Amino acid sequence: MKVQGATVVRLSVNYRHFERDTEPFTYLESGFARLEQAVGWCAKHGLYAILDMHAVQGNQNTDWHSDNATRHALFWQHPHFQDRWVALWEALAERFKGNAAVAGYNVMNEPASGNPRGRLNGMGEPKWDQINALYRRIVSAIRAIDPDHIIILEGDNYSSRFAGFEAPFADNLLYSSHNYTRPGFGPGPYPTGEWNRAWQEANLLAHEGTQFMQKYNVPLWAGEFGSPYNGAAAEIPDRMRALDDQIGVFEQYGIHWTTWTYKDVGVMGWVYLHPESEYIQRTKHSLETKILLNSDFWMGWLPTTPAKDLVHTLAHEIVETVGDEDITVAGIERYLTQATMATYIGALLQIPYAKLFKGLSEAELDRILQSFAFKNCIVHPQLDAVMTRHMNRR
Image 1 (cartoon, rainbow, N blue to C red):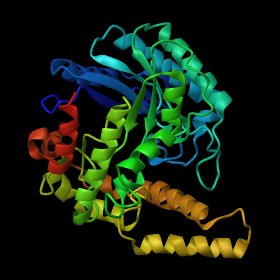
Image 2: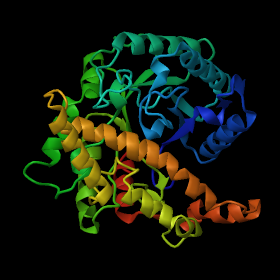
Image 3: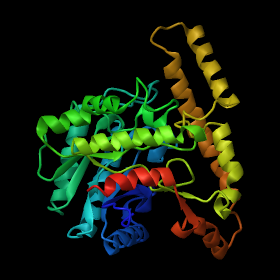
Image 4: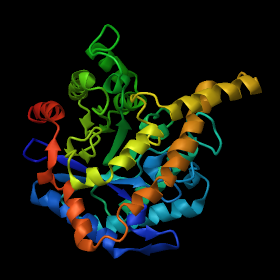
């Protein structure tokens, strides 16, 4: 990353690295040591680290990426979870205050305060009073310990909504939006009459995060965006051209950016595991099953499967039978897909996945996990070309 021109790494962590639900407010030294090791690697290579709390106590949204196994975002309903979130950040601030390799604290990934239990479309109106109060509380708690590091506040509704935020209320705040776009995911050619650089610019200027930045003259960081390449091979150049234009527009308007993600199993990582690696070969059936059963339902660009078709048919049947104009096929289909495929089936598939490693020795597990070592991975050539072209202009 350093050689290619990167300046910062967003280190995503889960509260479970530091605390067990059965022992709240009691912290695991192993989690802090592991994070300090990663920050130390950044310092060694002259990179900054942003500490990103990707999954908080009680779950800040209903999706899989907050490690949510219930589809209920209980963080917003229970003060207990909020107290634990603040206390953990106080512990992190105590550990990392004065650490020059840490650029800032990304206090909560993709909050969704307006997602009450049972809502069909999963995109309720933000509870602005609540999130504003919690952001004030977390900033005050961190500042009492660490007066120096940047504190990063993401927009509500998965880092897309900013209109109800109060004006910046403290020094050294950075606001963060997530900017995944249709042209970057496809399907379809890019550029076209509909999707092109002008569209990218208009889309960015219409984003509430950009408008908040311009209204208050504060910095904005596009903390997540990217273009997957695990669809049709013929579409990869289109996705990369879309990403290239998107980064170019960020640069034009002075918006900082980090792509999602650095390393994965061949979806949208800058670096990905070799298809013939021991890990991929061992988990091949598991990965194929996830696609067939649509447990990674966010990958909407992949071809349809019988499982997807069943949910689509059921959603139509429900809407036609109920006959309520406020209940839509899109809303029902999203809910069913998330609840059954991502939540239920996703959890179910953990059992056969775990069995793939049952009985193996520590040495055998370490050997398999060497598949993730950089020297054994592949740098995606087209994505690398886009990334380095922009990073080397800085």
